[in-house]
Image (cartoon, rainbow, N blue to C red):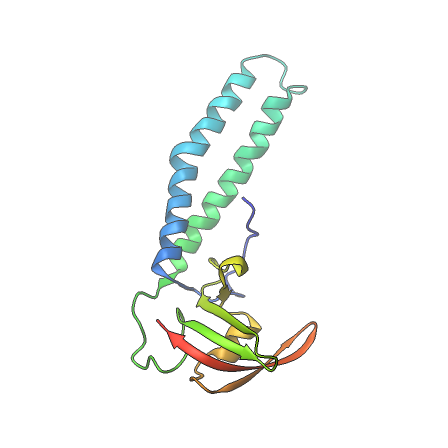
Length: 164
């Protein structure tokens, strides 16, 4: 439940097959495993008597509300998503799903994969298609120069590699 809820008007509906599988697995886990366990724990706590001072009962009910909210979000989001499961016709340019290597003016290299907003993970180099970096990269080719504005200022890069 660590991900914040997204408004569908502010994010792209695209997702990789791997990202779609992860969200589907999370939905299945919450529905088939976690929710029944928490429901049983709440029932057990309720059987102990006074619910107003029963911490296990109060915490369990809070967990159920969070699980139910996440389930509703996942069900709606999975219905709205479009799985991008093939490479584009022009693989010499950057599109959704591409692995891209860029280099800054100091020779520092970075590698990113452009993914949907539901699957971004900076630690793995996954950036959202809605991010300023991805927007600057889209439709570019090897050798193209890009400029990205961030809160820290403007940075320039050169695209050194594209693969799908």
